[in-house]
Amino acid sequence: MNRYEVALVTGASSGIGKAIALELASAGLRVLALGRDRAALDELHSTAGIVPVVFDLSDVSEVYGKIAGEKIDVLVNNAGLLTASASLVDLSEDDIDAMIDINIRSVFKLTRHVLKQMIERRRGHIFFTGSSGGLAPHPNSSVYGATKAAVSLFSSALRCDLIGLPIRVTELFPGRVETNLYRTALGKEGAKKKLYDDNEAIQPEHMARLLRTALELPDFVDVTRLEVMPTGQVVGGAQMSKLSR
Image (cartoon, rainbow, N blue to C red; front, side):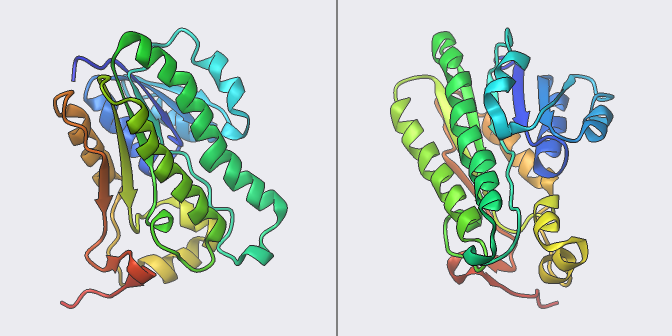
Protein backbone atom coordinates (compact mmCIF):
# COMPACT_ATOMS: atom_id res chain seq x y z
CA MET A 1 0.00 0.00 0.00
CA ASN A 2 3.03 2.28 -0.36
CA ARG A 3 1.29 4.31 -3.09
CA TYR A 4 -0.91 5.73 -0.33
CA GLU A 5 0.67 7.55 2.59
CA VAL A 6 -1.94 9.61 4.50
CA ALA A 7 -5.52 8.75 5.49
CA LEU A 8 -8.23 10.80 7.17
CA VAL A 9 -10.82 8.80 9.11
CA THR A 10 -13.85 10.52 10.65
CA GLY A 11 -15.73 9.07 13.60
CA ALA A 12 -12.51 7.42 14.77
CA SER A 13 -13.24 7.58 18.50
CA SER A 14 -14.96 4.18 18.52
CA GLY A 15 -16.61 1.43 16.51
CA ILE A 16 -15.96 1.08 12.80
CA GLY A 17 -13.93 4.29 12.59
CA LYS A 18 -11.57 3.24 15.34
CA ALA A 19 -11.10 -0.20 13.80
CA ILE A 20 -10.36 1.36 10.41
CA ALA A 21 -7.84 3.79 11.89
CA LEU A 22 -5.99 0.92 13.56
CA GLU A 23 -6.10 -1.21 10.40
CA LEU A 24 -4.73 1.54 8.18
CA ALA A 25 -2.00 2.39 10.68
CA SER A 26 -0.97 -1.28 10.74
CA ALA A 27 -0.71 -1.08 6.94
CA GLY A 28 1.84 1.72 7.28
CA LEU A 29 -0.30 4.78 6.63
CA ARG A 30 -0.19 7.97 8.65
CA VAL A 31 -3.77 8.22 9.93
CA LEU A 32 -5.49 11.44 10.94
CA ALA A 33 -8.09 10.07 13.36
CA LEU A 34 -10.89 12.60 13.71
CA GLY A 35 -13.47 12.33 16.49
CA ARG A 36 -15.13 14.10 19.41
CA ASP A 37 -13.95 11.92 22.29
CA ARG A 38 -10.55 13.28 23.36
CA ALA A 39 -9.88 10.47 25.85
CA ALA A 40 -10.59 7.77 23.25
CA LEU A 41 -8.41 9.48 20.68
CA ASP A 42 -5.60 9.87 23.20
CA GLU A 43 -5.64 6.08 23.59
CA LEU A 44 -5.30 5.71 19.82
CA HIS A 45 -2.36 8.10 19.88
CA SER A 46 -0.29 5.38 21.52
CA THR A 47 -0.50 3.44 18.24
CA ALA A 48 2.31 4.30 15.84
CA GLY A 49 1.10 6.27 12.85
CA ILE A 50 -2.14 7.62 14.36
CA VAL A 51 -2.53 11.38 14.83
CA PRO A 52 -5.62 12.38 16.86
CA VAL A 53 -7.71 15.28 15.58
CA VAL A 54 -10.31 16.23 18.20
CA PHE A 55 -13.21 17.90 16.49
CA ASP A 56 -17.00 17.96 16.14
CA LEU A 57 -18.07 17.76 12.51
CA SER A 58 -21.19 19.84 13.08
CA ASP A 59 -19.16 22.76 11.64
CA VAL A 60 -16.94 20.99 9.14
CA SER A 61 -15.44 24.18 7.68
CA GLU A 62 -13.28 24.56 10.79
CA VAL A 63 -11.72 21.15 10.13
CA TYR A 64 -9.98 22.48 7.04
CA GLY A 65 -7.46 24.40 9.13
CA LYS A 66 -6.64 21.32 11.18
CA ILE A 67 -5.74 19.31 8.09
CA ALA A 68 -4.08 22.12 6.14
CA GLY A 69 -0.90 20.98 4.42
CA GLU A 70 -1.82 17.29 4.63
CA LYS A 71 -1.75 15.39 1.35
CA ILE A 72 -4.63 13.03 2.02
CA ASP A 73 -4.67 9.93 -0.15
CA VAL A 74 -7.49 8.06 1.59
CA LEU A 75 -10.64 9.67 2.99
CA VAL A 76 -12.96 7.55 5.11
CA ASN A 77 -16.28 9.32 5.70
CA ASN A 78 -17.34 7.16 8.60
CA ALA A 79 -18.84 9.51 11.21
CA GLY A 80 -22.57 8.99 11.60
CA LEU A 81 -25.30 9.96 14.02
CA LEU A 82 -28.60 8.36 15.01
CA THR A 83 -29.97 10.65 17.70
CA ALA A 84 -32.94 8.46 18.59
CA SER A 85 -34.91 5.47 17.40
CA ALA A 86 -38.28 7.18 17.10
CA SER A 87 -40.99 8.13 14.63
CA LEU A 88 -40.63 11.44 12.85
CA VAL A 89 -43.15 13.27 15.02
CA ASP A 90 -41.27 12.22 18.15
CA LEU A 91 -37.97 13.63 16.91
CA SER A 92 -37.12 17.21 17.78
CA GLU A 93 -36.03 19.66 15.11
CA ASP A 94 -32.60 19.63 16.77
CA ASP A 95 -32.47 15.84 16.27
CA ILE A 96 -33.25 16.28 12.57
CA ASP A 97 -30.70 19.06 12.14
CA ALA A 98 -27.99 17.08 13.93
CA MET A 99 -28.42 14.00 11.72
CA ILE A 100 -28.45 16.09 8.56
CA ASP A 101 -25.37 18.05 9.68
CA ILE A 102 -23.26 15.00 10.54
CA ASN A 103 -24.56 12.39 8.10
CA ILE A 104 -24.93 14.58 5.00
CA ARG A 105 -23.61 18.13 5.19
CA SER A 106 -20.22 17.29 6.73
CA VAL A 107 -19.75 14.37 4.31
CA PHE A 108 -20.44 16.43 1.20
CA LYS A 109 -18.27 19.35 2.30
CA LEU A 110 -15.31 17.35 3.57
CA THR A 111 -15.31 15.17 0.45
CA ARG A 112 -15.33 18.24 -1.78
CA HIS A 113 -12.44 19.78 0.15
CA VAL A 114 -10.23 16.68 0.08
CA LEU A 115 -11.16 15.68 -3.47
CA LYS A 116 -9.70 18.86 -4.95
CA GLN A 117 -6.16 17.86 -3.99
CA MET A 118 -6.75 14.25 -5.00
CA ILE A 119 -7.65 15.40 -8.50
CA GLU A 120 -4.57 17.64 -8.62
CA ARG A 121 -2.30 14.74 -7.58
CA ARG A 122 -4.29 12.20 -9.61
CA ARG A 123 -4.58 9.62 -6.87
CA GLY A 124 -6.88 8.78 -4.01
CA HIS A 125 -9.57 6.54 -2.60
CA ILE A 126 -12.75 7.79 -0.92
CA PHE A 127 -14.82 5.56 1.35
CA PHE A 128 -18.30 6.13 2.74
CA THR A 129 -19.87 4.19 5.58
CA GLY A 130 -23.47 3.67 4.55
CA SER A 131 -26.14 1.56 6.18
CA SER A 132 -28.76 -1.03 5.35
CA GLY A 133 -31.13 1.65 6.66
CA GLY A 134 -30.37 3.67 3.55
CA LEU A 135 -31.36 0.84 1.21
CA ALA A 136 -34.66 -0.34 2.70
CA PRO A 137 -37.12 1.26 5.12
CA HIS A 138 -36.65 0.50 8.80
CA PRO A 139 -39.16 1.53 11.47
CA ASN A 140 -38.33 4.55 13.61
CA SER A 141 -35.42 5.64 11.42
CA SER A 142 -36.98 7.76 8.67
CA VAL A 143 -34.53 10.66 8.95
CA TYR A 144 -31.46 8.52 9.58
CA GLY A 145 -32.38 6.23 6.69
CA ALA A 146 -32.95 9.19 4.39
CA THR A 147 -29.53 10.64 5.23
CA LYS A 148 -27.83 7.31 4.49
CA ALA A 149 -29.76 6.96 1.24
CA ALA A 150 -28.48 10.41 0.28
CA VAL A 151 -24.90 9.37 0.95
CA SER A 152 -25.36 6.20 -1.10
CA LEU A 153 -26.56 8.11 -4.16
CA PHE A 154 -23.89 10.75 -3.60
CA SER A 155 -21.13 8.13 -3.70
CA SER A 156 -22.54 6.61 -6.91
CA ALA A 157 -22.88 9.99 -8.60
CA LEU A 158 -19.40 11.00 -7.47
CA ARG A 159 -18.01 7.92 -9.17
CA CYS A 160 -19.63 9.14 -12.41
CA ASP A 161 -17.97 12.55 -12.00
CA LEU A 162 -14.56 10.89 -11.57
CA ILE A 163 -14.72 8.43 -14.44
CA GLY A 164 -11.37 8.24 -16.21
CA LEU A 165 -9.44 9.51 -13.18
CA PRO A 166 -7.36 7.18 -10.96
CA ILE A 167 -9.53 7.99 -7.94
CA ARG A 168 -11.71 5.25 -6.51
CA VAL A 169 -14.98 5.49 -4.57
CA THR A 170 -16.25 2.72 -2.30
CA GLU A 171 -19.34 2.54 -0.12
CA LEU A 172 -19.29 0.25 2.90
CA PHE A 173 -22.81 -1.04 3.32
CA PRO A 174 -23.09 -2.93 6.63
CA GLY A 175 -26.11 -4.42 8.29
CA ARG A 176 -26.14 -4.97 12.03
CA VAL A 177 -22.72 -4.03 13.43
CA GLU A 178 -21.99 -3.97 17.15
CA THR A 179 -21.10 -0.30 17.70
CA ASN A 180 -22.12 2.65 19.85
CA LEU A 181 -24.48 4.02 17.17
CA TYR A 182 -27.49 2.05 18.38
CA ARG A 183 -26.43 2.23 22.00
CA THR A 184 -26.79 6.00 21.69
CA ALA A 185 -30.26 5.72 20.16
CA LEU A 186 -31.63 2.80 22.19
CA GLY A 187 -29.53 2.87 25.34
CA LYS A 188 -26.97 0.21 26.18
CA GLU A 189 -29.48 -2.35 27.48
CA GLY A 190 -32.06 -1.53 24.82
CA ALA A 191 -29.57 -2.09 22.01
CA LYS A 192 -28.34 -5.29 23.61
CA LYS A 193 -31.85 -6.68 23.95
CA LYS A 194 -33.16 -5.59 20.55
CA LEU A 195 -30.11 -6.14 18.34
CA TYR A 196 -27.45 -8.24 19.97
CA ASP A 197 -29.00 -10.74 22.40
CA ASP A 198 -29.30 -14.10 20.63
CA ASN A 199 -28.03 -12.52 17.40
CA GLU A 200 -24.53 -12.56 16.03
CA ALA A 201 -23.41 -9.13 14.87
CA ILE A 202 -20.67 -8.03 12.52
CA GLN A 203 -17.74 -6.57 14.45
CA PRO A 204 -16.04 -3.29 13.50
CA GLU A 205 -12.80 -5.17 12.80
CA HIS A 206 -14.54 -7.14 10.05
CA MET A 207 -15.47 -3.94 8.21
CA ALA A 208 -11.94 -2.59 8.64
CA ARG A 209 -10.43 -5.70 7.09
CA LEU A 210 -12.77 -5.45 4.11
CA LEU A 211 -11.89 -1.79 3.60
CA ARG A 212 -8.19 -2.64 3.59
CA THR A 213 -8.80 -5.37 1.02
CA ALA A 214 -10.55 -2.91 -1.31
CA LEU A 215 -7.79 -0.37 -0.78
CA GLU A 216 -4.98 -2.79 -1.59
CA LEU A 217 -6.41 -3.87 -4.94
CA PRO A 218 -4.79 -2.37 -8.08
CA ASP A 219 -5.77 1.20 -8.90
CA PHE A 220 -7.91 0.13 -11.86
CA VAL A 221 -10.06 -2.11 -9.62
CA ASP A 222 -12.79 -0.15 -7.84
CA VAL A 223 -14.95 -2.07 -5.38
CA THR A 224 -17.92 0.22 -5.67
CA ARG A 225 -19.97 -1.24 -2.83
CA LEU A 226 -19.27 -3.68 -0.03
CA GLU A 227 -22.63 -4.92 1.25
CA VAL A 228 -22.12 -7.00 4.38
CA MET A 229 -24.86 -8.68 6.42
CA PRO A 230 -24.90 -11.12 9.31
CA THR A 231 -26.36 -14.45 8.23
CA GLY A 232 -29.31 -13.68 10.51
CA GLN A 233 -30.31 -10.49 8.71
CA VAL A 234 -31.64 -9.54 5.29
CA VAL A 235 -32.34 -6.01 4.10
CA GLY A 236 -35.75 -6.52 2.49
CA GLY A 237 -38.31 -5.74 5.17
CA ALA A 238 -35.55 -5.43 7.77
CA GLN A 239 -35.91 -9.10 8.65
CA MET A 240 -33.80 -10.62 11.41
CA SER A 241 -33.69 -14.19 12.61
CA LYS A 242 -32.00 -16.16 15.33
CA LEU A 243 -29.57 -18.72 14.04
CA SER A 244 -30.53 -22.35 14.28
CA ARG A 245 -27.84 -24.38 15.96
